[in-house]
Image (cartoon, rainbow, N blue to C red; front, top):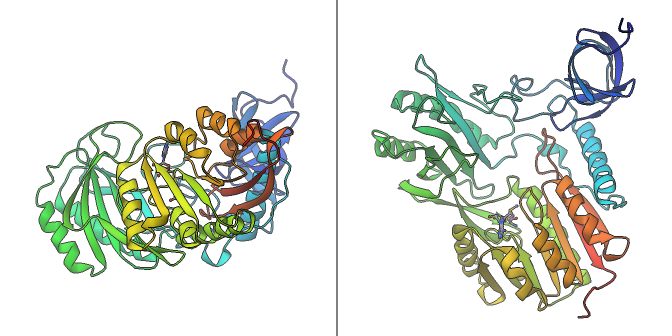
Length: 464
Ligand SMILES: C[S@@+](CC[C@H](N)C(=O)[O-])C[C@H]1O[C@@H](n2cnc3c(N)ncnc32)[C@H](O)[C@@H]1O
């Protein structure tokens, strides 16, 4: 006979959450198990019912909330409890900040062995909504005919149909409802994952935070969208700030939203943006930080630190994109070498340098950081790395460890992979020690966090 309190589906318990997971669910401990409770905040007590065991965890559902946290708030968006786009809308801004700061320091310590208190946090509670300058929203035409447009339901590939998204820049949010209506009327087939049909897959929107320029991109598996030109011209007439309408072709069923080919349907394929007073152009496919003022805040930290510790000299900006970090460094007087493998981005970086009169101090190299880093490293006084979520490849780490530059700024959008890399870069024997730690919230209302670690060399494997 199982004991009455042995964990089993259906058992009801009272638990207190002590943490949140990345999906914004509460985590409680009970008899050595981790209980995952949707919609329960740290400190809150609830009666729950166990649902299903997943290794050392139990999924559960919340029955009654017995003690409520002061950090609990009513979500701004009516779809927040279903839509997977935001996971922390029910947490007040200060609660989100505390949780993210704790997550960061614990992750760096647990996975990276780096015990460093936060130097300065960069959170902007006044702009915790309406901040996203880009959206790529899945589309699907319903069997009965209308278009569904929205992000996926949490834990599924089902679209939560929306007309508004409060984390989007209001200038993009204002486009969603009328565009959805037009996509409906245009009659184009749509299926984001190409499971049931071919045709439209995503709606891409971009806005220049400072310029107000707008760009609409239809991502489709093919180019047979009847009267597309007419619709695009209509949109250009309707929205004076619309700089262009483009069609991106993504016929392959993989997890990349954008395909390799983008065609201009009306206007042009880029928008203007300003970063730290410099004028940049970016297009549909190029990476750009989604929160322009927060990006400026952290780039300013990088520039000031480089100015104070390096002074002048040559800085390598690995994973440089369109030059968002390289150009402000060059404007400070540094000579900068940028490495980027996306061909459109590197061309835009070159043009952005010209646009700002910084070509003489900027050299942009097209290719893989893995292949190009070693030959550039010995000539540089400092390095900036801003890799994608997966962090630094082992080959890149090996190159840095073999010839560590005196100063290294590591900007990351995933503290877990950053911590993994720091385990090698900033272990007890060095070669680096962590000078400064800056969490920067680019993504309020979600569990994502950007983190900047500034590293100073304390030992050197190879004499320089
Ligand atoms: C997180 S983004 C950073 C871009 C830029 N630093 C910025 O702030 O806008 C990462 C960039 O690295 C590029 N990338 C990814 N893997 C790469 C690799 N192995 N070698 C060179 N560039 C790479 C991507 O195309 C993307 O532009």
